[in-house]
View 1 (cartoon, rainbow, N blue to C red):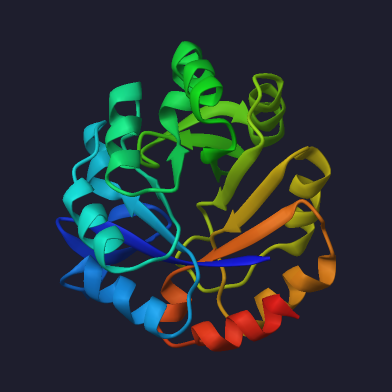
View 2: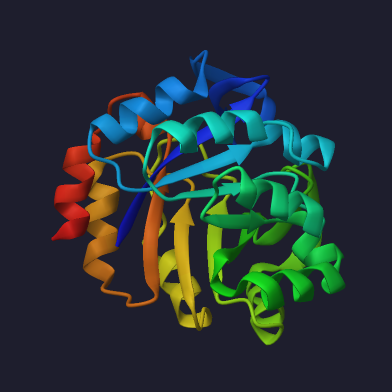
Length: 241
């Protein structure tokens, strides 16, 4: 299972939000590159970067930070936030992203989703962000009436095989994962998924490992790392088994 330290970029800084609220932010690094350097120096083999400015604006706003990180650090990066047309996806890939994470556009623009999956296959990851069991969109600022399981099934019918599932109600709260929810999502996903939102301690990673879900491909952690609830080496020791 892969471990992804998260770097969320807002106003050019590495931040964490609470429950996806842009007004409830904590700045952890003035330069996202410093955050990336720190995680990789500790042994991180992958990074998860979210352009929060891009998610709000509807187009990428921090590709220059992605370029700075990928030009210096030789680790695969998945990048999302504001990728709502093929041009934006190409720009992110040119800037060094190994995989691109689609959110709002995957639900609202089926033609775009189909074209992206046809062009880049498993390099396309769709983020299913959920509040109260319903899919959230537009940088977590809008909640739809679409249940998470329906969304995943519809996306799979269109060829999507890679997902990030985030319980936004838990994100940034450090209260722990709902392992029953993770197992439920695993029963629906036919490809691979990464779980995000709520990791608060090393016990959460131990719990994920104990589920033994072959389609659970990774876990994203942000605030727990910044708040030193555990370290990257400790996380890898658990997940590498």
